[in-house]
Picture: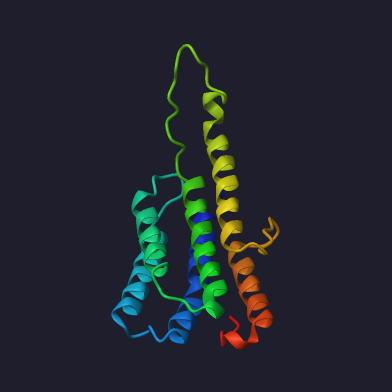
Amino acid sequence: MCQNAVKNVAALLAAEEPSLKAVLAATGQTSTPLGVSILASYNAALTSLQGWTPGTPAQDVLQAVTDFQELFDTLPLPPNLELFGNLILGATEAVLGILVGNSPAPTPVVDPGNPPLVAHENTQAAHEAQTAIETAAKVKALVPDFKMSIFHTPQSQFVSQWNKDVDANPDSGMPKI
C-alpha cells in the first residue's frame, strides 16, 4: 500500500486546478452554470480526498472524484482543447486508480471446488497490481503519448505533460503551469 497515497492524489488533483480554470476560461465557461458546477464539483472532490485515510474504504471520495470527472466530461471542448481536456480526465483517472488501489481489496469469493488463483494473504497485493494495470490502460487511452514513471510524482508528471502539450500546441492559448 502506498504510504503517501493521500499526499500523492491530493497533490495530483490540486495540480489540475490551474489547468481546469484555463480550460474553462478558454471555452468561456468560467462563470456559466456548467463552469461553476464543475469548479464546485472539483472543490468537493479535493476536500473529500484530503479527508481520506489510505487503507479505509474510499467510496465517498471515489464518488466525489467520479462526479467531478463525469461533469467535466460534459464540457464542450473545441478540437484544439480536446488534448488538454483528455489530460485532465487522464489525471483524474489516475486519482481514481490510486484511490482504488489503496483501498481494501474486495473480499474474494471462495468456491470450494475451485481454489482461488491468489492466496488469501496476497489478495491486497493482487488488487493493487490489477488496479495499476487497469488504470495505466485508461490513462493511456486518454493520453496516448503520456509516459508514466515510477521515479516522478503523479503531480510532476501531470505538470510536465501539460507543459509539453502547451509547447507542442502554442495556438491553443493554454498557459504553462
